[in-house]
Length: 174
Image (cartoon, rainbow, N blue to C red; front, side, top):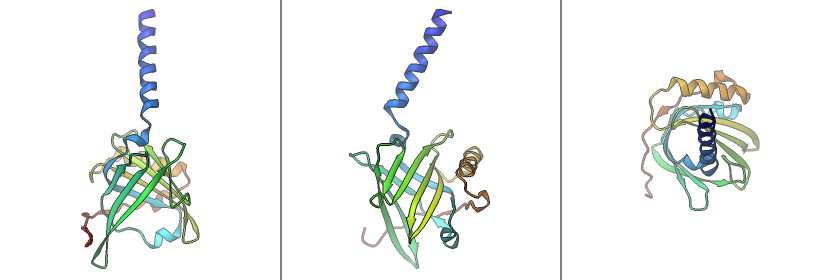
């Protein structure tokens, strides 16, 4: 019985130590597909993204993250690049000099994340929650977890949008 207790205690200790030494946002890096998006603002409702290119996340040396994606507007490709500045809270980043916050939350489903963005845009307070994953394949378990998350955060599930996946374009300046 003592051996069993010791084995369980050591297993729990090593799991907790591993969680402390590698916070969830450290694993959030690579190329992701936006699988679902919801906003609580009518501003976003008027401009629902019909197509979204892959989102590329790169971890910078100082712990900040660089987020990049491309848009094709009126036949012109434009690269959007944002720096997410690390805060003292695990999983929480700020951008645009603290005007907006981005919470990055690991899901129970492998390689799936929820990005909760809050802040001011054109003088209005907005909140947007995105479900991202490593590929365009549907994952019902991830989508159910996402729906529960957005419901708990006060979003209207009926406003969840599933964007079409667009290929990344190449900007002219590249």
